[in-house]
Amino acid sequence: MVRAPCCEKMGLKKGPWSPEEDQILVSYIHQHGHGNWRALPKQAGLLRCGKSCRLRWTNYLRPDIKRGNFTKQEEDTIITLHQCLGNRWSAIAARLPGRTDNEIKNVWHTHLKKKLKNDQSSQDSKSHPIVSIPKCDTKVLENSNLDKNVVTSPQQCSSEMSSVTDSSLEKTVIKNEEMDYSSEYFPQIDESFWSEELSREDADRQTTDEKIQFQFPKGVESSEKDSRIDDSMDFWYNLFIRAGDMPDLPEF
DNA sequence: AATTGATTCAACCGCCGAACT
DNA sequence: AAGTTCGGCGGTTGAATCAAT
Image (cartoon, rainbow, N blue to C red):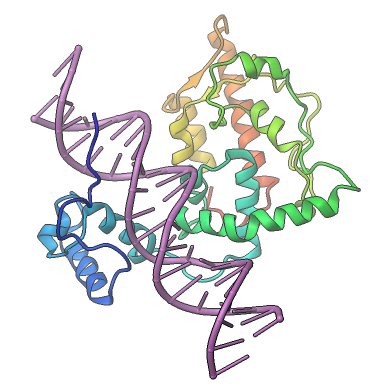
């Protein structure tokens, strides 16, 4: 099935938004909300496609958008999350309140990528990784059904992060040589987990309520699942929150 | 002051998956 | 079950701005 581009319909305006258009969109959404983006421009009297309206609202007009330069802490947070999540800008944005995926993507491409490259080259002689997580058997990953772009288990994250060096993040995020980080041990977490902002308490409650979908290898006793889930949750909690020293993150 | 090349960032495009018909 | 609609995502573009000459 091939779909025509949404703006192909004649008469729809493209390009930068005028202050008048912004005003119309904002006042309409304040009065009626945005139940149906496709129908919105017609009802609001805008010569725009719904997609353009949604983008303008989510990236610029939303009242909770934080404008201005990124702080050092925000930049560090992006770098850290990018090392683990890759180009999953929306997932990164979900952990930076007031920042949009588009903004983060722009900052990454214009500032952080260069910064990381410079820092990395200056650190090459020292060559010590910021993360000291034991690597797992890479064959396990290669043979798994994991989406290469989706981090669903600690060992996948660690195998990517352990090769990264950055002076601004010169710290050990987590180190526990005794832990078993193999995918045989850790359950995989349902991807929807990453799109939600959870507090530690929420995460614990959801774990016990089995609202987060954990996938275990076959043959794992149900009595053992709880402790494995606990270890897994501790891993992510330590990685992103405690050891990351990221006070600007939403309150977990 | 004029020109040119580099950088920034708002906006668009195409694709995908979920929901709906 | 198949087709359609819709919202959301990541990649890319190009106009505006800045810096260097």
